[in-house]
Length: 274
Image (cartoon, rainbow, N blue to C red; front, side, top):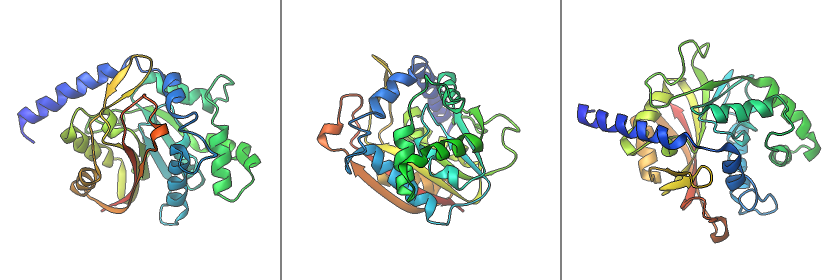
């Protein structure tokens, strides 16, 4: 990468960091993780689609090991509800202290934290268990989360030295890289950085936005997103040393377009690091 391009990425990354300072976890959760986007009675609702993809990925039998790292957790936990059954250690990460605080409140069973019980119930049903087993799943998740760490995907070493005992066996990342990168080269560079956390032969499970240019991180908090498509994401993965095992997409129904973003669709992928 040329020095001019590196300087451009650095300037863009700094600008992105400023965009995120007023991010409000409670508003973001309300926008995206309550109905209609989280309507569990509808098969075409976004959230059930994502949870179904994650369930299939973590029950296929090929993803295994000791440690799962969630890259850019935000204030959300849905993305690790299936993975927590497969791994004994789960590390959550985010750049923003307010998001890390939101995660810690739920982990500490704070009654004022976001209610993830509908998600837990739904995933229990996907697993063939009673919805009332959600209490056990919540306890399982709390027991395997070993830390909530700061991360910066734009640094060659995204986590602080010694944060992990060794390379992770699996990475999960949801709506992170495209939402924190100023352009496509920065996306690919960030992917390369986070891939250093993963062992060879380990798996990456990723969910992201398709052709999105912005989303709201709170009232009046408009955060730019680099628009990506399947061809670009696949090319980035291959450039960073992955074999793509699965790539599927979801197109938003009209009534899911609720004015908090301009996302066209969502992708889900599973890849293996060479």
